[in-house]
Length: 223
Image (cartoon, rainbow, N blue to C red; front, top):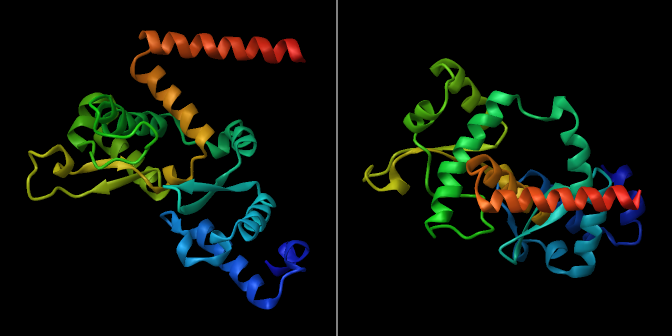
């Protein structure tokens, strides 16, 4: 690692180098966003820019969470290229199950005013019974898809609380920690895709499609 970052770290003393590497390792490997108060290299703007440059060497970037916490994620241009590679994209069945979790754990609570518009994490689990009702997958294949999504950090399982009648304590599946790593642009794109999946005939979905066609025309004209 030191060789990879040598060009970026050469001008810093030993203490600063250690702080920069510690911040880099934290944002790359933590499951949750890292509070900047714990890492000088995340608190100080100049050092944070260096952390960002370190991440950029592997196509990554810093993602801010709740103003004072940070985690890493793929840059939007890199994510777009990875999405073209079938090896980097979950199979169709897993994407369908993930979409159901997002609809029931995020889209529906958000429509009810229970979640902030920019949040992709949720305290409202999708019960496995709901997933079984809404999918045609055999139980074994559904369980296998959920298991692979959990391993990838795309969903997390929540145990039922003391009051199963409370939607937030019912138990089931919610979006996983990988959703912390979405850039603002990626969150917006995901929100649009969820609207298109949940209400393809809605006026909002029609507006999204029209806006996308307009962008495609502009790109075609510029080329």
